[in-house]
Length: 182
Image 1 (cartoon, rainbow, N blue to C red):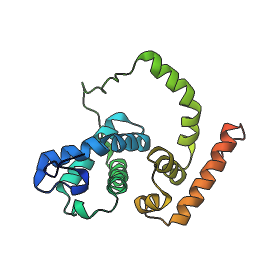
Image 2: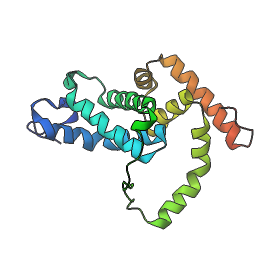
Image 3: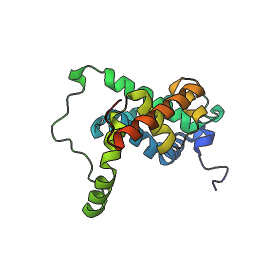
Image 4: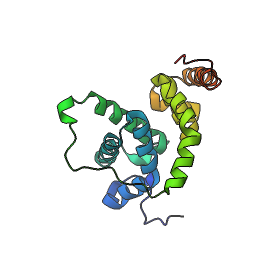
């Protein structure tokens, strides 16, 4: 448990500055990076979005203490930053020479096993149209409620439920060899 003097994501950044930002990054950084990577399918762009999201959080004029659901809020900021990254002109996205992705610390064996067991499901989810794909990611991976997903995506809770239902149907058909209807 955090003491009253320690920064926490719930209390926002406020006067705690970098320590407060660090608390947000520790708590939500993995979710932000994974969501950006899932959406953009490019590690370097996802890392750029990660930095942009936390820069936006740091500069935010929104009272972070008043945010009802910080995880849903930061995921919405992440999705908006991903959209912005996709709209950037190609000449601003040119990679710099010498930049390399960070190597993972997982063993090669574990990575191979995980990749093999998840490859088919990943392909099926990735093949879904974006509205379905984002609902699946937010519901199953980030474990947000349908109401929270509606807040993140700016749609009604009923729309989220419909998209999840349709996504499940499409995934079932695809994984059972029924085709790719997405």
